Structures are given as C-alpha cells and as structure tokens.
Image (cartoon, rainbow, N blue to C red; front, top):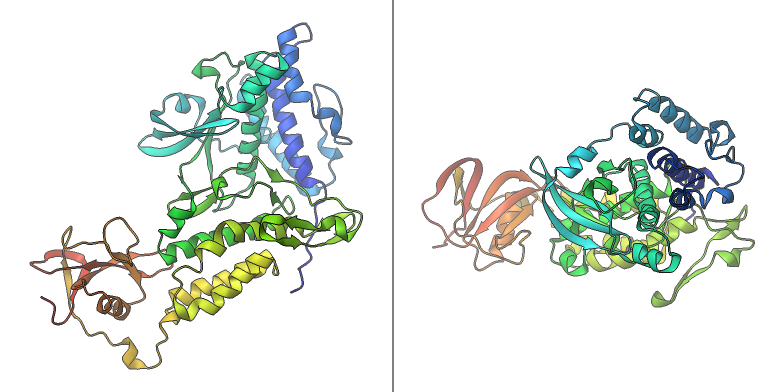
Length: 482
C-alpha cells in the first residue's frame, strides 16, 4: 500500500528537545548553582550544561545569559510555544529560581512538588539502570513511581573514574537525562505514554542529602515480559496490541515530526491498569536518517533476516522511523501475543495484522484502522458466527439479584484473574456455551461490570448452594448440575 505523505518537520523536534534541555540546564547552572568564572567547581558544573551549545547553529545568541531567540526558530508552532511558556513564567515569583527556570518550558501544571517528594511514604526499591533508580512510593494513599539519579549506577561511577571530576559534576551530568525525560514525557501527551505527576530539582548542587536529589514522579506500572503477556486473556493481549498500534500512529504523526524509538524493547514499557504505556524515552530519535541515495535507507535486521527499505527524499529516509517502529513492535509484541488463543473466526484478520507488523507493509494509520476493526469484531460478537435467532436463545435457569460471593471459585482455562474463573462474554448465551464446554462448571454469575471492550464480566462456579442477595448480579445454573 502507498504510504501517506505527511507534513515534515525537518528541524522542529531537534530544536525543541535539544534547545529546551540546554535552556533549562543553563538556568539550573547559572541560577540554581550560582555559577561564576572564579570557581573551579562551578566551572565544572557549567561544562555539563554547555558542552553541546556550540554544536547548535543558528538558534539564537551564543552567549551565556541568552541561549536562544524565539524569533530565530522557523517553525511557527514551536516559536508560539516558546513565547507562550516564557510569558507564563514571568507570572511566577522571580525570586523562586527553581520555578522560573522550569516554567520556561515545562507544563505550568507542575503537580507534586519537592515537599511532596520528600514526604513520600512506603518507599520501596523497584529497579535501576545505568542512570536512574526507580522506587515505588505512596502519596495520600496512591502508589506512584519515583525516578532519581542512581549514584551507584554506571553513568555516575564511570564519570567519577574517567573524568576525575567531583560527585556534584557527575551527578548533574546524569541528571540531565531526567530533565530530558521530564520534557519529553510532558510533551508526548498520549494515553499510551506514562504521565508525569511531578518533579523536583533542588536549588543547590548534589551533596548526598535527599534535599539535593533530582527526581521525577510518574504513574506506577508493572514490568512487561513475554510470560506475563502470554498469561493474559486474549482480550487483554488484544488491548496491549491495540495500545501499541495507537502509540505508533501518534509518534509517527506527532507535533514534532515522526519519532523513532531507537531502543524499542518490552522493557521500555509498563502496564498501568491493563493499558500498555511507554515509560522510557531516553533513546527517542528526533529526525529521519539523512541519506544521499535510496540504498542509504536500507536497514537490515540480521536476527530476523529482514531488511527495511525506504526512499531517500530531500536527503532524508522518508518513513524510515515509522517502519522501524512498526517492525520492532511486531517483534516484541504482536507477533507473539496476538495469534495465541485468538477466536477462530478472527484468525484471518489477525493474520493480516501480524503480516502488517512483521513486514512493515502498511503504515501506522492503516495498522490502527485494522486493529480498530479487530476490536469491533470481537466486542460485537462477530466471532460467535450466529446465523439465526435460535443462536441467541439462552437455556439456563437464571435468577436476578443473587450471587455466590467468595464461594465455588476455581481456576479455569478462561481465567483472566488469579485463581478464579473470571471471563468476559458478549451475552448470556456465550457464557452458557463456555460453561457447557467445561465439565467442572455448574453455573455462573453475571455481573454489571464490563471489560475494556464493553463485554460483560462473568464469574464461573464449580458448585451451587444457598445463594446470597446481590442486586448487581444474575445467578445462572447449568441444567442437570448437582
């Protein structure tokens, strides 16, 4: 299929990200840390934040106090953003250096503050990488994820070993990645990207105390691995695939141009309330790859024995970011999780979706449409293949307002949660069909709860007895069961 041509932003994302980080970092360097030319320690900190400045050409005044001019940026949307955010920062107390620097580009809806971060309870270590450590924390009863610089991580320890600089210098250098992550996560406003709930950048250099730690707070999610995914119901795995497809379409057509997830792995994502969300944006690419000829745009994947090919247009590999994202999403998500357990009538459509991911033969908009169709077919009962009225007629004895709460639960092959047999159905007839196929099923309780596709949640039971009243349920017993 032909790839839909879209408006290109050849420099906007590079400018918006690099310039933002430099601007914020310089404010931190000159305002928060009080940098002067007389202090060797201060010069070290300044080096952290200004080492990339000279590589940026034509973006504004190359001085220390003014790193850019809004009028020098060609993209009108970015220029408007810069002007608006600068204007909003002028409304803040100019004596508050922290707020002034951050509100120059970050959302004015800051969320949790430094005081909130320091008052977190039940802090529990989750994981760490080269730069950051992640903790599970609680704020007013709500669980969140706290990310901060890991002083024992590879970034800080390598810096200390190889550069001979101070801990404050190496900490600040690592903290730039957290600054970048805050900016990008706030800029990528999508349901399949984790939300920033707050952040803290102290007004003095790191000295080992909690009051000098740079940190950010985001939604808490659970890690994703292939075993966890395969243990989900097919409906929940469809939700993950659908969310990945929605995210691919968004980042291919973001306000900043087509983005590339250069480190596309399941480990970069988490599950938040069953919704898959991108949580690590350290390696987001800002522009299409440069090229001189079409062959420059060939990207081989040796592990998959496959090569992605795109055209070199205006010295850019047009559509390469989108194709790489689609191909990698197939390798790490849909190819493994979507075919397993698919209802047979939906198999052909699932095969088409898998082919689109595996070969990157369609763009993200077309994939999103294909997944929309698949979700609609499943939620509407298309897969039940009902041909006449009798296919909808229920045959179990049912009584409204009764339940077996906490009794006769067991784990079955349809289970979507724990040790109980909880499933979603299109209607009572489908619940009866599933119960008939399970020799241990003696009946079921239909709830008023709905799954993410709008299907009814049903609790299968392996015995029956004296029911309890529940105005929100319907109790159905299998005929002839004892």
